[in-house]
Image (cartoon, rainbow, N blue to C red; front, side, top):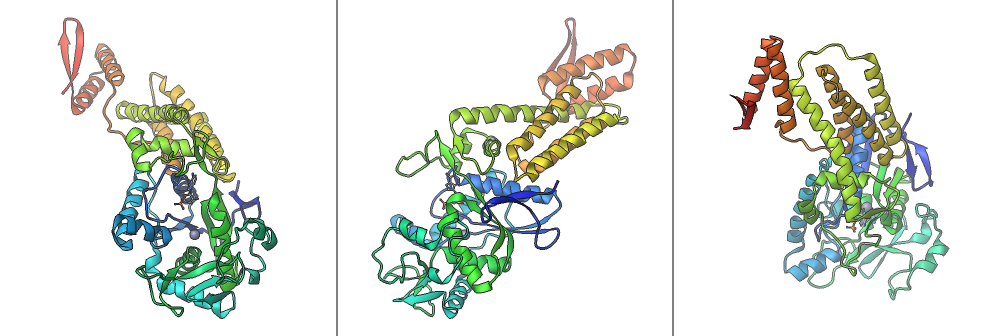
Amino acid sequence: MTLRVYNTLTRKKEEFVPIEPGKVKMYVCGPTVYNYIHIGNGRPVIFFDVVRRYLESQKYEVTYITNFTDVDDKMIRKAEELAVTVPELAETFIQAFLDDVKTLGVHDATLNPRVTENIQEIIDFIAALVEKDFAYEARGDVYYRTSKFAEYGKLSNQNLEELQYGIRIEVDDRKESPQDFVLWKAAKPGEIYWDSPWGQGRPGWHIECSAMVRKYLGETIDIHGGGQDLTFPHHECEIAQTEAVTGHPMANYWLHNAFLNIDNEKMSKSLGNGILIRDLVKQIKPQVFRFFMLSAHYRNPLNFSDESLKQASNALERIQNAYDNLKHRLTTASATSEIEPALTDRLAAIANQFDDKMNDDFNTPDAITAVFDLVAEANLYLQQERVNAAALQLFLDQLQAFDQTLGILSQQTDELLDEEIEQLIIERTESRKSKNWARADEIRDLLTEKGIFLEDTPQGIRWRRK
Ligand code: AMP
Ligand code: ZN
């Protein structure tokens, strides 16, 4: 089955066909770096990481770009509040973001460009819009002339008239029309600024992504992503800017994740119910949070609560236990013989089921069902007294392959569990009874290597850890 993705632009699931075979160019709008990220911000971060990992598992070469908005009104206000410069503020929260997403097992982006490193490209982009009459200057500001872009509203499925109703009438006589949006803002005294053909100022928010996408990925990219709140105005404005200049679609597929709520309420500053990622991971394993995020389809709202986290934790434990048990049994499994073809077939069917679900618009909850099918097969297999190292390896490889996409397993130390030690001692006693000295010695060596000492006592064999 080929990959199909839901495209916000066309409002349907479409077959995914990359511009260049075997390659995917992907851009996800990143954070404004004036604060630590909260659990809601974790949703796009984790979801698009999984999209990227899955595409890579399908042998695509993915270029994944996500930006940092390191100058804007919020940054300026926060820097003032903290009595630091805007670049100092940005540095602090860029590092914090990178640390947080690493904790969440998110792979590094190919590149994390920043607005302040791309001012010239942004100015050039705005100049091209002015040149084409899609933008106009008004007392040091530059605005986008929405009425000139006939397709304005196509992403969020609204037309200009409808938009007019929605917009609060701003007292801003610089704009020709209330829907017009700012591309360049004149600096107020004391604010950070750059020189431009329109005087000293800084970029508006939307223009940075148009400039960076074009610079780092080209005129048309495969996937553009972000949270659903970015559809309008941010992505609508990106389209208007880019397509006015290039005459080509900005992105072929627009993907948006739904929101994460807390206890069925919107997370908001006024409710004071936001939770930072860095605080959450002091309470729970980051893998549990990842698993929880992937337990719902990305286009459905997801509710964060103690109960839903507990469920995620229990479910993940079942997968982790199977994984650990497979690894431990492998350290002691003796003979390697042929794997039963029926087992190979069952595992291949489960792998296909996983891909089918991921291919259906990244249906992670259903893909996780395939992971549980594998866990059930593994547990059944592990109940056998004699296990085959090759079969254990096959289960492990498959589980690891799923995890390449999901990133939910912990790599624990390969310490032996108590019950495994006891199992090995029984096996050693039996080996000695049956005069299988080689196996008995092998087990003794293995236990010594793991720091387990055996003592013969009148009550039988006792063991202790070093
Ligand atoms: P912000 O820093 O709020 O501009 O958001 C950065 C990214 O996180 C954007 O892609 C937002 O759409 C996304 N986002 C913010 N809050 C939530 C939430 N509660 N649930 C899901 N995504 C969110
Ligand atoms: Zn953007």
